[in-house]
Length: 297
Ligand SMILES: [Zn+2]
Image (cartoon, rainbow, N blue to C red; front, side, top):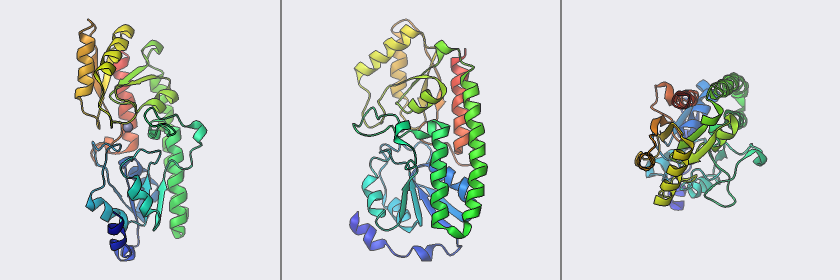
């Protein structure tokens, strides 16, 4: 990897004939933030498409090529992109490489369930934390491209206002679920920030990373919990195989309680570009509407 980066470096200027800042992001969530803040002054590519699992994602040769041509690279950080850490660290020696989580006060972060001394990386599930990621994007773009700083600042202000409205919407919808039913069971522990911000107890089958297969004991334990609490619905996720949640559903049924699959939530990836769920605001709305619909019954 070192050889590749060094051998290919140095022709970034030739790539931006249109004058736009060439930005590459790991997740599509971050790409969407950059698009909203950067507007017409940036060209944005995200490495991870719909359904991609950032915990397991490996950089292809094409990805490395794209990263080395970027003017600015944004990633989530907090060990979300566990397999890309080395590549990102090497890139940081040559160009602006920024974790969007950098500006968040660690006191407001939750601990990782899987990695000692790491934080839970799923910050986009609390809209107020994600707003701080957007501010990091804004500040980085303003520093990287001072000529267009005023535009970045204005775009960010408008987008942050939309996100503040989004946060209020999620809180309002969450409050419609009866308190005893505010339990969210999903395929992996992505939703802890969501739970804290919007008042849900959260259970994931797989721990915080998808790197470990859920064991049989975990399935049985979760099935007991669901049957005892009579939780009406559990959820599958766009970036985690469905079989894990189906195993839980079957184990709950074996205990004489019928839990339905309440729908598919977008956890660590966005949906298809050009659909409402291809944007951050779209997936947040989709998720809360799906959760409220299934748990309010
Ligand atoms: Zn995750």
